[in-house]
Length: 85
Image (cartoon, rainbow, N blue to C red; front, side, top):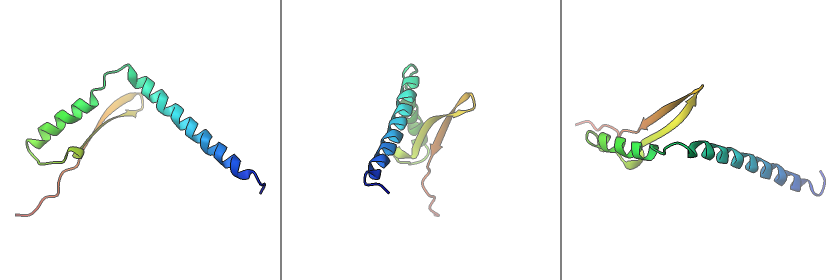
């Protein structure tokens, strides 16, 4: 092990971080042209769900995921535990 081998590790880490940043920027650029409806959709879904069940604001998660060549709307709702009466 050479005296300056620790510097090579930082280059690898920096390179990995740079690649990740490129991916994030590319994703943001691809989403920049479309409407950002997910926060509004999440808020409206939360309002509707709260008419029937008392849930926290963080209980509803809305995301768009790729499934092959299609975009799929992924909605997840964490319901509170039921208490027996």
